[in-house]
Every structure is written in C-alpha cells, then in structure tokens.
Image (cartoon, rainbow, N blue to C red; front, side):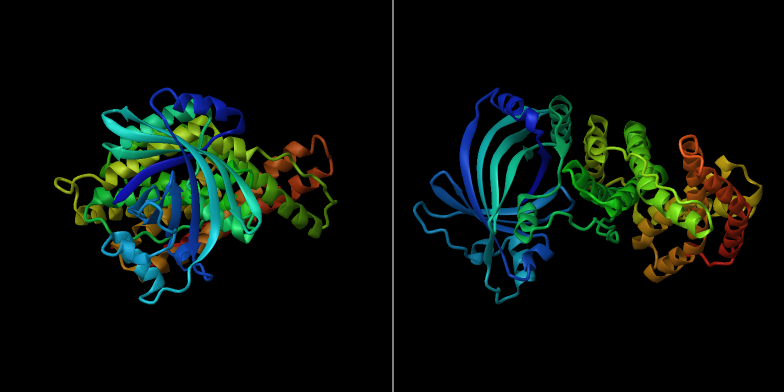
Amino acid sequence: MPEFELKFQVPSGRVDAVAAAVRRGAVEEQRLQARYFDTGEQALAAKRIALRLRKEGRRWVQTAKAPGAHAFERLEHEVPLPTGAAPQLDLARHAGEPVGDCLREALGDDPAVLECYLETDITRLSRTVTAGGSSVEIALDRGELRAHGRVQRVQEIEFELKEGSAAALVELAGRWCEKHGLWLDPLSKSDAGRRLAQGETQPPAVRPEPPKLQQRTGTGFAGALLRAGLQQALGNAREFGAGAGSDEHVHQLRVGLRRVRTVLRELDALGDLASVQEQVGPALDALFQVLGQHRDRATLVPALEREVLAAGGPPLAWRPALPDLGAAVRAAPVQAAWLQLLAAAHRLEQAPQEGAPPLATTRRLVRKRLRKLHARVLQEGVRFETLDEPARHSVRKRLKRLRYLAELSQALFPDRAVDSFVGELKALQDALGLYQDEVVGGELMREHAAEEPAAWFAVGWLAGREPLLAKQCARACRRLKKVDVFWD
C-alpha cells in the first residue's frame, strides 16, 4: 500500500528536547536492527527500490519499498517472518503486490545474487497522535548506519500518515519544525547507506527529470509539475542542510526553484496556486537571493577576474565572503515553505477528477500563457538597447519563465517540437545571461574598489562592454522572431 511520510533531521542540540516531546503520551521504544540488500550492480538502487530484513523486537520482518506517486509517497509491503525463523530473503513474499512487480522489473525473472550492503542499529521512540482528525505516527530514530567499516550517526524524526489527511500531517510536522529546528531530508536510510558504502561524500546534483503525463486532469498535471520541481529543489537543498553541496548543487537548486515558481505563477488557475505563491513567495525569494549571492561570489567573480586579467587589467585576489547556505535552507520560513508546497502538490494530485479542468482546457491555458510570454519577450527584447536596467532585467526573467514553462509543458505538446524551440532559445539565453553577469559583476567590482582601487579597471572595462552586449541581446531576440513556435 502507498505510505506518506516526511523525514526530518534533528539538530544535535535539540535531540533531548525532541525526545521529551515524543514522550508526552503513550510511547513505544524498540531496537531495530536491519540489513539492506541490492545486487553488486545496484539494480534496485537504479529503480529507487529498498529491500530489507529488519529485526523488530524478537521477530524479523521483510520489507520492500518502491517509488509511489510522488517524492514523499512510497509503495510498501511488509511480511513478518515466523517467530524464531532464520532471517533469509525470499522475494516470493512480495508476489502479487505492486512493490513485488517493481522488484521483478528491476531484477528480472531470474534475480541476481543479492548482497547486504548496509546494516543499521536504531533505537526508535514512537507514539501515534491525532491531528486534524488524522492519525499520525511520530518516530524518533537514534543510532548508526554501518557499511564497509564506515559508521554514520542517525538522529532523525519521521511523521508517517496512518489514516486521514496528508495536509494534517504536514501541518503537524510544520509545528514541530518551528519549535525544534527540524529540517526536511528526502534522503532515505537505504540511500544514505549506499552513499556510506561507496564512500561518497559529495553526491552529484539532482537534475530535472522530464515531466510525465500520468494525470487525466489539469489539476493533477499541475500537481505533478509542482512535485517534480520540488523533488529537484529538495534533493539539492538537503546537501547544504547536511553541510555539503557544491556550485552545481547551487545551480540545480536555483533551477528547481525556478520550475516551482513558474508553476505557481503561470498555472495558478489550475488549483488556487496564487494563494500558495502568496504564502511561500517571501521565503523562496529570500532563499533565491542568498543562492544568487553565493553563485555571484563563488563563480562569477573568479571568472570575471580571469577575463579582466586577459584583457590587460591588473591582477585581483578578491575572494568575497560566501553566505551560509546551510543556515539558509534550514531556516524555519524555508522549511515552512517546503511543507506548504508539498501539501499543495499532494492536494492537486489527489483532487477528484470530477469537475477538474480536462487536459484540453489545460493545453489551452498553457498555450495562452506561452503566447503571452513569447510576445512580451519579443516586443521588449528587440529594443533591448533602448530599455533601462529594470526593464532589461524583466526581459531576462520573462525569458526564463518562457523556457521553463515550455519545458514543463512537454507532456502536452509534441516532444521534438518543444525540444527544438527550447534549443532555439539558447542563443538569446546566452546573450542575456552574459549581459546580466557583467552588470552584476560591475556592481560587485564597484563595491570592492573602495578596498582595492585596482578593481576600478574592471569597472571601466565592464562598462565599456555594455553597449556591445546590449546590441547582441537585441540581435538574438530579432533572430528568435523567426523561430517557429510549437503551441500554434
């Protein structure tokens, strides 16, 4: 059956307070010792499937989990073994279940030899509460992951819906986040164990996945798109929350946020998303601003310094202080925004089909929004050289929304036509991106010149390039006017 649960990391200084909060009611304490299995080629990992044997008290339980309808919903099937039975895997125990079909698809009819790649030793403190008429299990896990001689500490809390509304679970979890400083972590124990087993300290960034059209209504489609953007954003944000992350994680987190904001802004009519945007907008804007500052200082400044030096300018050795991305993604307003967005995505995906806008209506709405964005970009872009700076920035933001809305609408229109159009946007995106980078770079260099006068060369050199770059933007926009669109 599908499970809906949210997992959060507990800050070290808050563990005792969280444990005390869990104990305010009838609690159960268990020692859970588990073994996780996969093939040597990671066949189950490739399909995001977890297969384990776990000792719960005196009995072993075999459990298989596989992806559900969205990032925080999983297919799960448990089979208790007879008391005293030896803990041996038997895939036939999941036959006839949806997760059993997933196992068969991943392993074939003749499963390869499965190996234990992870062992866990967890003490779980749990109780079930009633919230908003729903039943939710709260479980605090403390212990260790062990793999190939490596050990990783565990201190996390899960909220699992037993019966009722996912929105009620989200609201309950939000209160705990605000009170205890919890931060949302979509990485499962099995995936954390795979990283530990492989000695992976800097995982690759989560890139966008092409949206799949599984819904039959516009409301469900909007929910699926919102979920896809959230998966990308949360997958990258959690690395910073955990104290890791790279420049590529910054980039992909920014992309995920842009996709989320595009859905909220351009598809608001499909599910009262304007109200969601009003609630989460300030927190997402603040996070996006911090990410932009990090990107400009960590990536843009060194690149501009190299260009200025190649142009004959003086060497600069400026490494501006970087913002704390971990603190930014763990901030309470950001955590509240993630939860509100998850609740919105779940509400849209689970909305009754009766009375919801059909896909034909959705296609017309998306076509209208694409047409409007496209027209504004062309109208203002061709006279880019005559626009003031705020208007130029607006052209770039509209182009971004046009690109992301085009990509997100791929399931509604012919794939090749969408890909071709998005590819044709590249020249204008590159021109506008270069222009914007040098505007921002000039502002940063001007600020730095107060401390290092040599930076004035960079300020002047960048200002001298501005007319040429603006002309290139206008020229690229005129070329875009000749490109066939896919929505008409």
